[in-house]
Length: 275
Image (cartoon, rainbow, N blue to C red; front, side):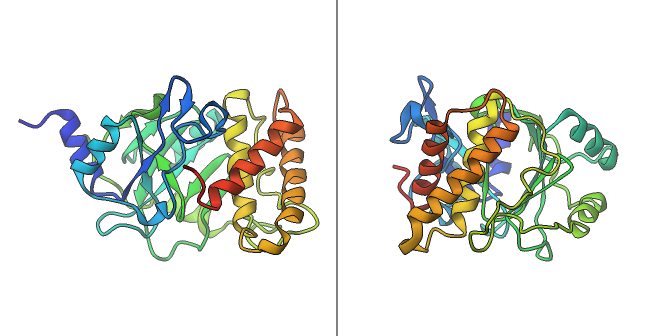
């Protein structure tokens, strides 16, 4: 007879799953250890976007070795493909709950808020991440770490309900999103930072500060990482932008040295030097 764990794993393996670094003795299993700003949250190795699996045996071996498991979002894998919708605040969660009006899909809790998976659709806009009114839409070319990693717990587990199509309310938010500045950190380095991170963003607490700044730095670096001749100039610019986010939103603020460390870690991550 299949256990609850077996049933959950069987259904999870319908998704493209990837291996994510774990946490041992409060240290990430990557080479940065306790210095890692994304402990237990970032994937293994180079080319992780192409290292997904649907194999239950493979995923079980990862977990037995102390690794976490993530789902690759967007058009990936050969079975189910999903997006992740996360409410970052209590207020955003209340709005989202009201809009969803009882729609139940695979979901889990994390320190930042509730994650919900919905089936990916080809006509979604070509963005990796969008943030609207405190709700984050993770659409493609990124991943989300699944329970039971880092205190995450299932709210509606894969053995208790089915994945749902994207509700009309979420389509409406995404389709009507009209940023006034360059978003998703795509394009050349500009004179000032894109303001998407600042629109409606609440004060960032110590638990999530490093992870939020790291995610922002990765997004900035992604658009310029191949411009190898000007990486030092880009680094200085990105440090100033992440420093501005630190100054305006993080309480208490991180040190300038910590900001530099986060920006450098994001650069190394995108260059594939996680190990």
